[in-house]
Image (cartoon, rainbow, N blue to C red; front, side):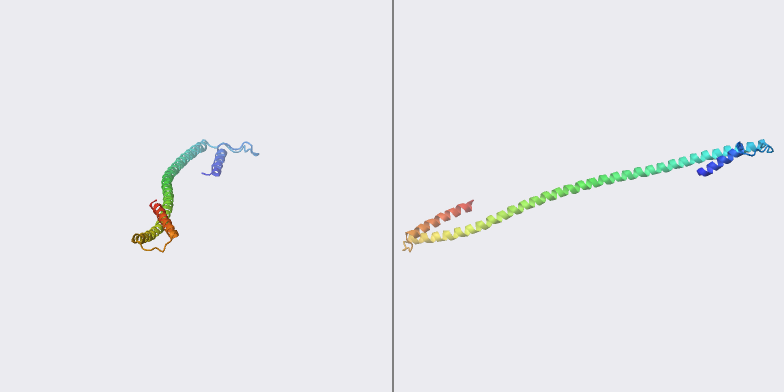
Amino acid sequence: ATPAATAASDTARREIAAPELGSSAVAPSRPDPPAEVLKETFLLKAEVEQLRNRLRSCSTSDELRVVQEDCAALRSERDGLRSEIARLESSFLSWRRSAEEAEALRSEVATLQEQRRQLQDRLAQSAVLAEANARLAAENESLRTRLAQGAPSQHSPPALQSLDDKVLRLRELSASLEQ
């Protein structure tokens, strides 16, 4: 029942039960309604009121049921969202740990690459020193052999000094190679 329909039916009931007192034309010729009509009007009003109360209670219980269903649906949706949030937080923490691990591994790779480069530099330097050491050792051996045979040396005393310098240089290279 709409509010306009309710107001119209209320007005009609009042008019049937009691005519307006403020009307300009008082009808003295109009007789009081018979008792039977008054009784019927009273019963109809009571029935209308009962129907309205039933309608209100039905609509209230229907509204309550709808509200309860909406509430249950919202609770279910809330629970679903909470579980989704928990899953996303767990996933986020997993990704975060993975990112931290990846960053630590990148740092370790960079450190290992730097160590490798340093070792390769030292290896290249060692190869150069080993080659120089082998050449000087061979030259030293050749000179010792000549001296031991007593072969005339074309070296003069400054040449012997050069030999001593080379031996000293050979010892220095051997010492640096051992390091």
